[in-house]
Length: 201
Image (cartoon, helix red, strand yellow):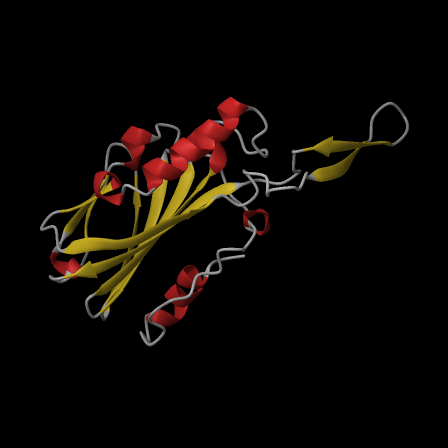
């Protein structure tokens, strides 16, 4: 399920009246197909407010997509959360027009809820008969990280050049699809490690 930020993108071109956006943070990323190596970045601005959403397959950030089981896996998820909250080092606006107000990260089912164990059955069709097993802590769908940012801007973001440094932090990301609605302007581009800068016009 897409968050309301992404859903708002399709209508914000004509009507930028949905601010502030309320995120559906309890959405499950398994409903949204994804490709390893491909991430998405969306920016929507209205007035002095800017909201940004970044989403990526968990594999490209931490090397796995099942629910974290070991201490090392849990620490990897927590480290990624902490890194994603440091927006200033990940996205660089040329004229530094904005100040981060709030950052949050949705990890879907990567971290177990307190007191709950995830049990998912799946069937192995080989060996001439069905074999159904219960596995604790593993899901048969893909998990993603989704980071949400709220910023307050003293200057128009549309006058900025944006440099995306996520490729340096997470080398497994090969492409980032960027889309934006800034006041009455809209645009889209695909960034790569070799071409990571865009002019927001």
